[in-house]
Length: 246
Length: 307
Image (tube, rainbow over all chains, first blue to last red; front, side, top):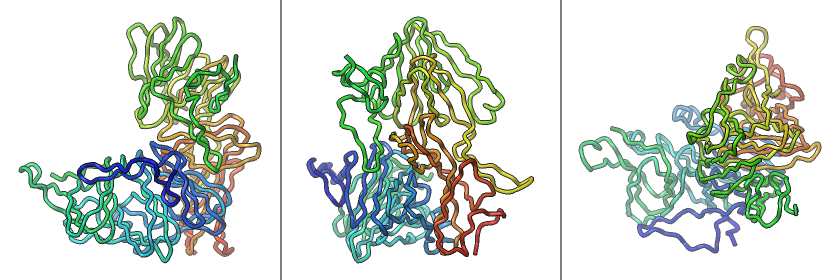
């Protein structure tokens, strides 16, 4: 009754609002899905936990502080990311933990919300706001991209950098954590949408993000929207830190 | 007729009710057990009732649940004052001084608790999204609870606290520093007669039974409660790294037999640690570096480990 690749329930209506936002599939309790020899199960509704069953030699990676529990047989290894100095300045993690099977391990973020399951097709790039990454399989490349323009860095919402995930030659699995509820829509070529900067969660790489001043009234003259321009998929979260700058 | 044994509180009651009268867990819900053996504690249904003595507790709300109590004349509950949400004027409130005041202050624990006596109504809640866990205790039963998880207990449950031997020491001499990832104190509750203990777990709660000798490694702040029979020890994970300078990941090793409950939202130990000079009793470590020249399990210096 659920998708074997992302765990989404298949027997529920495709819930889309009139304005085009589709609720990210709310995974059922204990929904299980599989990519390669990695099996993932999502448990909990308030602060969901992602539990992985790793076959011998299978690897996932995640940020250190998301580790909840593990079995003794799961080997951990540190992996430094590129340009760690820049990432440190930007307040981003400069290293991740790789967990190698066999065994089981669980990760979770320290906040209410949803786990977003994004199976990545080969060569597809996805950009994610900082501190939303939960876990990914080994064949997913993890890099970051600097947001163009100084104004975008300070007023665009996600900060100086976006995490960029790229699947290799085979399909990969990327798990994100969205605060509150997560919604997604697909923008056509040149189609734009203005998003409260703190609400931005992820986008396909072709989607551009840039700051646009809020036009309504003098009190908002230093506030900015994050303008997302298609084509591609964008995701937002409903609980966020308001980035209103006055 | 007692033919329903609740899988969560392990107490028996009459069959046919939608909820367990002892702990409020839904009796008609499918057990959600993952492949590893963790059972998700089902949230207590909105407005579910729990009977204790002649009094009753009703759980209201689902995001930040409130425990509303209808106290019978002469029956008492006690609690930390910050958990009090409201009380009606007929409920008698009194302070309850806790022993070992200096130690409690050093541990960041309240010096006083409060007692409420019936008849009357009174309500309690934590102020974080999560679940209320009702733990009915049989006479003589003891459980250990992580600090700040306690919500309210009946007067038949006595309270003590202890310092968990989950620690490591960094440095020597005057630079010696002790780190306690589970905090300075844990609460210990003992039922003198049958009683009820309410806890609050942040996020979702999961429980599992560890067999004798079975072990699990858990983030220290994720622990909510455990049976007194479960042993806990410090465990250090040092991930392998090409440069062997990786920080330690402090975890708590839980050894069965007994029941263990964890929460999915917890505080991360933010400090960077590169080594230790001494581990707590039965402490263990795992260095995943395969290169023996980089295998340095015990650090004598405070400097980071660089090859």
